[in-house]
Amino acid sequence: MTADMVTVSSVSKSYARRGGFLGLRKEDHLVVRDVTLSIAEGETLGLVGESGSGKSTLARMILGLVKPTSGSIHVDGVEVGGSETRALRRQMQPVFQDPTAALDPRMRVLDLITEPLVIHRESGTKIANADLRARARELMIAVGLDESALGRFPHEFSGGQRQRINIARALALRPKFLVLDEPVSALDVSVGAQIVNLLRTLQREHGLTYLFISHSMPLVRYLSTRIAVMQQGRIVEMGEAEELCSQPREAYTRQLLAATPELPAA
Amino acid sequence: MASLSVSPNSGTTQHWASGLRRQPLAVIGFLLVTLFVLAGLLAPWIAPSNPAAIDLLHRLQGPSVAHWCGTDELGRDTLSRLLWGARLSLAVSVSVVAVSLALGLAIGGLAGYCGGWIDHLLTIFAMNTFLALPGILLAIAFAAFLGPGFQNLVLALAIGGWAGYARLARAQVMAVKEREFIEASRALGASGMRIFFRHILPNMMQPVLVQAAVGMGGVILAEATLSFLGLGISAPTPSWGSMLNDARSHLFDSPHLVIFPAIAMALAVLSFNFLGDALRDYLDPHTRIQMGL
Image 1 (cartoon, each protein chain N blue to C red):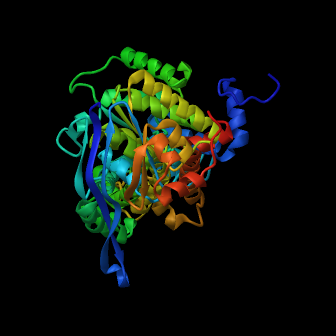
Image 2 (image 1 turned 30 degrees about the vertical axis):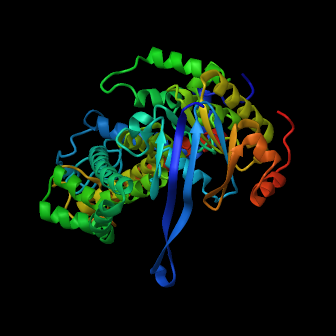
Image 3 (image 1 turned 180 degrees about the horizontal axis):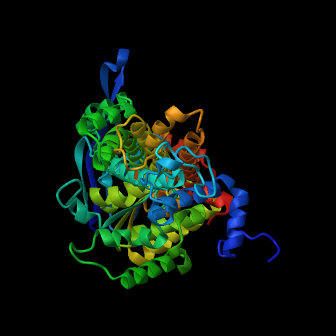
């Protein structure tokens, strides 16, 4: 049994929602309810559920972008939201759903993918441009893009290429853990399959730990070691990927399995 | 190369020609603004005579070879005064837009980025108060209060103008702040300062720059208004507004005294508006591709 990379213990998140006459009545809307899970080093935990089930909120809490209402999250032994969060971000990087929206349209690819290096350089030091460029070249090769892409802007690329740029940026600091929030949902199927295969290769090469969020059961099944099924903010079922897919206990899991067509083996 | 080419490096003449065909107003605006700026910068060297030189023997003359735009009631050369007036308009509009823009970006940016009570305080008590009063009225009040002089004129006009930029900056910051790449850079660990200056500012400048270009025209008009009312630059310095004021009593016997400053002013304002439109097209990467710029 390897050590846990991520532990989420009884985390909840609620948003205040105003209702009633003139919005005078205030009620709490629970988006994530008492979620507990852990991700072992080197494994991929797949998180499935329909839209609005709280998957993305959970991901944002793990990334430290949203504060949980209650409960605690640890990544690599460090509490998310604590004083060491900034340093922790070296180990934990996100890849978001919309590859276009996640890239600053006014920055060139070189600046985009080396930004994490610039942000996390030792304070007061400066990284030589040649070093940045060299690392950027490595990253481009790692995600299967041409070096000539470095001088161009995001809008000059296709969706799949943009997601490769996002992945390159996420890998820049050689992190241990990636949060993949629906990384292929915005792409068409064949391009998505290429990205999924790239993610798989990268995981093997770099020993990465993944939290892979998707609403597509076949994709999650293909990529994950274990799967957690989320419904209305709760984890309703969690288990080894093959086992969960072949013998689902929950009706909701069966529903998800039935709802999505099988992908031809990519 | 006989066929038409979209490549920007296919020779300057051809580039300009194709630009003229695609965006005629932009090119006209750009040329007029260039002309205006050159007239303003070079006025001391290209003006045919001293704009303050009085020649009572040749007063109120129509356009002639000696005086292309005629002379005014004191016999001063109108063309020279127009060129020096362009110099004043240029100096005032650049200074006012720079001051208003700096103030507006700082206050609007802070309000939009911080949100919460800082936003409330700045928006309600600073921005809305100034937006509620007509800018020109504020400028007149402050110009009367501060007295004449270049610095006071700039200050008075900036006081009337900064809130518009602040409102735009605040709205832009709030819109850009919610975009996903901002969240992405927060997740990467970027500091607030870095997010504001490296990501938000470059992505919100486009409409602000367009407004600044159009605002240049507005300031030229506002300066002329103040000078027309005698609240601008004091007498010997030529200003288009004060030229129009001087010409009031000669509207029918010497109409050229009204026509030339009015044309100069209209062209200057119009050209900045054209330039603003062109800038919007140019700065937007999507239209850039469509238009092949």
